[in-house]
Amino acid sequence: MDYSIETAPLEELQCDCMIVGVYQDRQLSPSALALNNSSQGLINNILSRGDIGGKNGETVLINAVPHTQIERILLVGLGENTPLSGKNYKKALLAAINSLKKTQIKSVVCCLAECAVIDRDWQWKARHIIEVFNDVAYQFTHTKSDKDTEIKLEKIAIAAPENERALAHSGLLQGKAIAEGMTLTKHLGDLPGNLCTPAFLAEQALELGKQYDSLTVKILEESDMAALGMGALLSVSRGSRQPAKLITLDYQRGEKNAKPIVLIGKGLTFDAGGISLKTAAGMDEMKYDMCGGATVLGVLLAAAQMQLPLNIIGLIPSSENMPDGDANKPGDILTSMSGKTIEVLNTDAEGRLLLCDTLTYAERYNPEVVIDLATLTGACLVALGRVASGLLGNDDALCNDLSAAGETANDSLWRLPLWEEYQEQLKSNFADMANVGGKDAGTITAACFLARFAEKFRWAHLDIAGTAWRTGQTKGATGRPVPLLSQYLLDRAQQSD
Image (cartoon, rainbow, N blue to C red; front, side, top):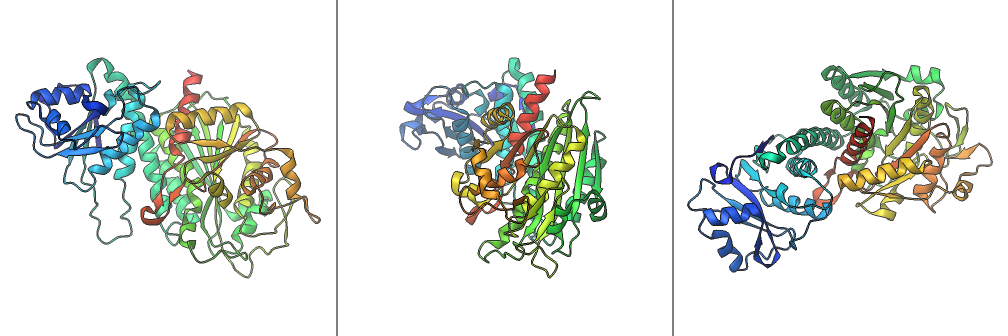
């Protein structure tokens, strides 16, 4: 998709479609008013017929626009004529791009950045137009013989006044970087497990390293992990014919001695559950169990494109979890890299086994903060649905920063407690801890398990089991939480200026 900022008067522009907003009670946005005047009251005529009432998310496509060079006008309802919330702005953007999906429109000028949004500037508004439009325009065709996509859009210009050009252009650059990070994350998530293996994920990371001088990539093989004593991580890969990989990405654009931000993403490219085999229904969606790892790749791509002045380490433990004769068995005792022992009560609680050794490995980077993200527990989907990702951590300031970034990015988090009482559920008669804590508070006890390996640094855990992909008729990866983590890094970069 080609994106640009356009500051010329609307009447001088040529495009297949111009997107303008209308408010309730037939009130027009500035661009809608200008088009109405240049088209001899066309928009007012449409409103007077009642085809659109201005409710947020309503749309009407006008296919004939006399007396102008514009071929079509898309009217988008904005609700009451007051500043929009960030979520209502996104709702209007989604309605706009979804209404154009099945048309033959190739070029649009979007005038919705002129809408007032509470506490948001032109940079934020322009960025969100690109993120939302690119998200909806994405379609997975890699494994289809027919590569033709439903949406024909090729060019999107964002209309802005000359005095806001600089902010809008900055938002464009941020939006393109984050959108590309989301596209990479979604593409990797949507690939099937027979193509997207741990080795394939490692290859994608190496390709990123070739594209950006600021990014150094190394791959730890199973022999390297064995030498480090990663007994928990390697126990998961024993049941698979695909060797595990620990993918390490080192992004350096901050001060030389500045402590890095470490991002750890679970990269389980397929999860059958191991010996504790999952039920058949929906098991195909377990190719999405690597979305945490895919997100780390997407976020580092965005950071490299934005040239953020930070030091960031990305760690992706990648494996499969399969029911082989050498796979983990319930009752097995593992020794983690930290030396702590783990009783495996359920082999389908394997993600925490990958993450715990990677958390210990992260200590060598002397991190300022560590953030892990994983499609870890179905319990998080039960608790929060597909709206918010779960957040737990041992540092209030870090958790507050992440929550604030989620609000800004329209990529919400909800914090759950990490109280000592929940640790009681992980007691084992035979090891230092069990890998599951029973059916109660599954998301919390999973984080309690990880917390035991994150005692030496500020740490937060994001459970994205409900938000990393959609199911049903719209099944597919969402690219979340790339926007959230990109915003967190943008906030950190601004603090370091």
